[in-house]
Image 1: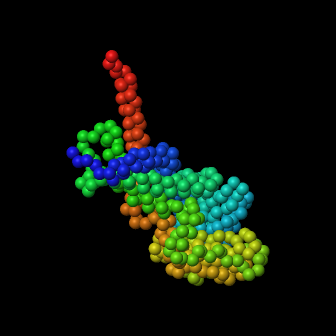
Image 2: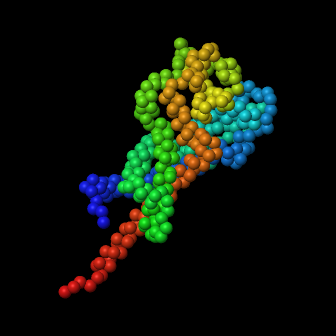
Image 3: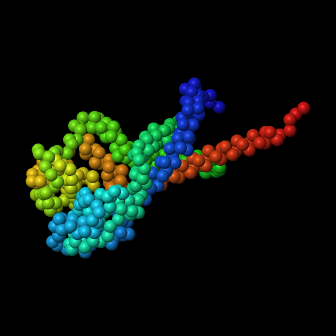
Length: 385
């Protein structure tokens, strides 16, 4: 029998006294939030495929040409939603896609869906009324103040303690012992079987889960985003330009703004036009150009709200390294890279979280129950005279 070295004994003491308890109790607390985030995130993986199928009456129209002007669409939507202020118009290049016009109200935001060919109102609902929008609200904790702080801290602790600490606990002492950590071991029962399953799932899912957590952190923390700019030696993004003279409310039409945008980039796959409500604010246009490298690779156009003069045009092709990295991170976090295979990998990683939680909890309580039974047997054992 080999005698363990001093280094091995020291590491075993550190694992038992510090890393293992920290990993366990973080799982009992923060782990609940992480399981909730993973489960709601899993429900959104196939949103692009499923949403049109269950909400086709809102999202899909009969293709036609030409389309009505954006000002006509805005007028129709305003008549259907007179109590709100029109914030933006969301368009898609697909000929069968409905236009989505978002209104700001006292209770939040509402979306009116309009047939871009006829101006017919297809329906309207609140920002988080749809099943996938509700899942997004839950996933990002948008139902409470400072919800991003909860998701951000939980993701950080997941990376540092649950995933990082789990890797330290999992790491085999020898290369030969690696096989016992990456495959099921026959003959195991009870807690040993649970722990074996816990380690295997953790090993095969950790890369996906770490990627998902790290790419989600820019949505929660400004300092994290700033760190990306610092590490890539990129300039911080410039604020939206102002008009030279703070004039009154917007007078340049959205249809004219849309035509101006198309003169800079023809037939974008997706466009989001934001109204300028405050004096001096520009009309902001977000453009996803054809053949964009990912679904978050937007170009940004700013127009004078009264004259339509181009104040700034920031195409994605000239974006900084940090902006490109953040765009890729956002698309990767939402499972929009790699096609169906990427979605399946992300789904498997997300579903692994509740399984890891269950196996970890069950193994712990199984061990506690066994220790309690052993203590009870010792207490009932006859004492020698």
